[in-house]
Structure formats: C-alpha cells, structure tokens
Image (cartoon, rainbow, N blue to C red):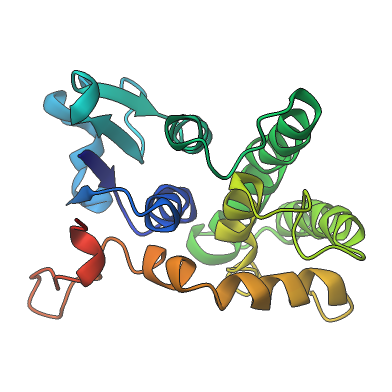
Length: 219
C-alpha cells in the first residue's frame, strides 16, 4: 500500500496519475496548503522540504519519497513499467522528465504566480515567464512531431510534462499554433488513468467537507 500525501496541483497530479496508470493500491491524505499542513512537524518528518507530494511505501518499511520526479522514478522502478529497461531508453525518458522538472514546472509555475496571485501586476516579469514557458512548449511541440508520446512509448516523462501543460490556460500561454503539443495534450486527456489522476485529491465542497472519489483508495 502506498500512502500519498498530496494536494490538487500539477506536481501532486503527477503522482496520482502514475499510481492510477500502474493500478497500485494507495490511500490519499489530502493536505490543505492554505492552512500550512505541509509545514507541520509530522509532515516534515517524511518530507523535510515541506512541499507536496510525498509517497510512503508501507510495503517497504514505510519508505518515504519526496519530490514529484523522484516519486515517478520510484514507482516506475518498483513496477518495471512506464520506463524502459535499456540504458539508452531509460536515459531518454529521464532527459524529458528532467526537462519538466528543471524547466516547464519552474517557469510555468512562476507564470501562474505572477498572472494569478501576485498583488501587483508586473508586465515585464509576466512576459519573461510566459515567454520562457512558451519556448519550452515549442521544444515539446518539436519533439512530438511524428510521435504519439515523448519517448515513443508512453512513460513517466509524458505524465510529468502533461500534468503541467494541461493547465496552459491558467498561465495564459498561447498554444494556438502548437499542433503536435495539443494533439498530445488531447491524447493524454483521453486516458482514463489521467482523468482519474487529476481528480485526486477530490475538491472541497462549499461546506468544507471532502468529496470522496473512487480514486481515493484502489485495491
């Protein structure tokens, strides 16, 4: 059994999508980021960085893994799926996973912050992060020319990048001419496990209670 500590963010969705794709049994522990759940001592004991997500493998002596990319690698290696076994194939997947971890996530994340949450509008800053996110999207678009998935077969690289790309509207990124990227985006969105994964954890209702979803616990 995997315990998944998460919240409804792109990085959180990476872990839940992977768990759904791999059909691993897992239980969801929804953290309220606005209330600072991720900074509480009991959580910092399993994730010293105080971020989400974190997985705890109860079948492996309560082995904790933090950082979304590391969780994807752990789950793929645990099951022998979503990552190639050969050295070159594995490297290719890792390259595109790192591309997301070091590029798409940080740049699009900053675009989200300055577009949506910053108290003062800073056009130059917004343009800087939107433009860099758009450039990274162009790299993905080029990579996807003639490919259904980033590395041939569906992999954790697709999960990691899609968890961010799917919310391009949130950062107001123009994707109108990125046909390969948008075809891949639609292809990913049609996968049942992706659909289930982005519903974890379930959203709060108006009265503050948590709606339970079938993805909360799989057997």
